[in-house]
Image (cartoon, rainbow, N blue to C red):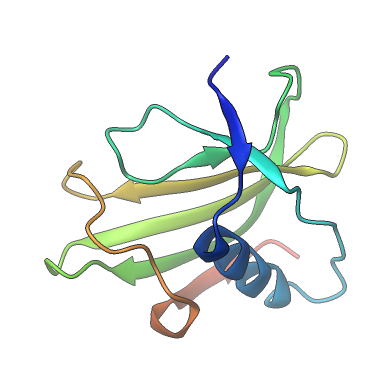
Length: 112
C-alpha cells in the first residue's frame, strides 16, 4: 500500500466540482488518499485499506493540459457507495503539467 496523505486543496476543489455535476448524489469527500502509480498523471485512490471493489463510474470529464494534450478525468465509486478513485488518463501517457481547475473542465457524461 502506498503512503496515505491528506488531499490537496486542488484535489478537494476538483472532486467537489465533479460531485456537484451529479444530480441528487451526496457523498462525503474523504480527507485522505494515496497517490496511484500512473506515471505522474495525478490519479488518487480513496480506498485507504486496499479492500474496496470498483462499483461504477460516477462522472467523466475532459481537460486540456497546457501542452494541448487531452486528459480524461474519471471519478468512481466502490460497491459500497463510497468514493473509490479520481483517475486521470493523459492520452499521450505523459506527466500531467497543470492540475485541472474546475473552470477548465469539460463535462463529458455522467451515469446518474
